[in-house]
Length: 311
Image 1 (spheres, rainbow, N blue to C red):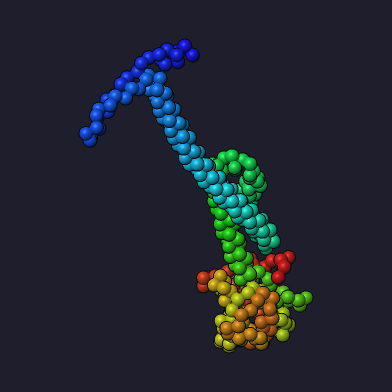
Image 2: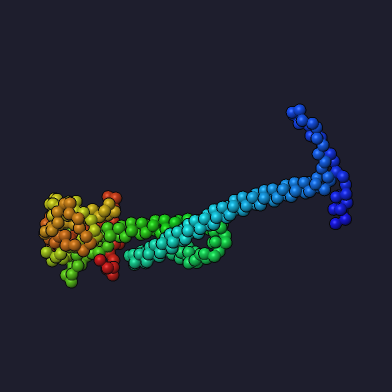
């Protein structure tokens, strides 16, 4: 208060005002208290402008930050959606693998895998599940973990597919392998085996390229495997002859037949009726001469007989 009174006591300053016209010069007296008041008002205005400017700048910064946070939230939502989609695909892939395993278990009972324990161990890698809380916290690490797991599942799926293809090929090969006796019955037996034998006509040793079954005329002959008929006609000492190509794996020949029930080009299946035992050609009685060839080389047909095997 004393300072204000002291300022009021000061005389101030005088300012001469010179007009442009012919008017006389005037003195304007400005006391110090008025100058102080003007200065205070000016400082107040400047302070107010600075305050408003700072607040405006802060508002702009807050809006930018809010927009950035909204963008990050949107990215996180999209990332979580992507994680959920990948997990869903992974679950479908694992379900498919389980289906493959069930199918492999139902394949032919005589087929075996080289390393079944290894397959079980690889399948066990996928028994664990993913935790969504961990994925959300892990961010990019969670995405990479899912991608690696999806890739591993894809590789295992491809491995199962290859194994299934190999087993299907093996099943096909077995279907085309002559593995049953072509003629059966109480009055049927093998009279001449495969290999070196003594000729019933000349008494000399020779190589017998197949097996001779003695059976009553008309005894039914069944196909020992799937295949295609490639020859059915009379041929010299062999009499009525039948030849079947078993899918390029093997070839079987039947001679001295009394009747043939199929024709060249016919597709046949294992255990299908194809011919009947006879006495055509050079023979001393009713019989079936049966040969098995692979790559043009005669094999011992008895090696393929599996009497306990389902046909």
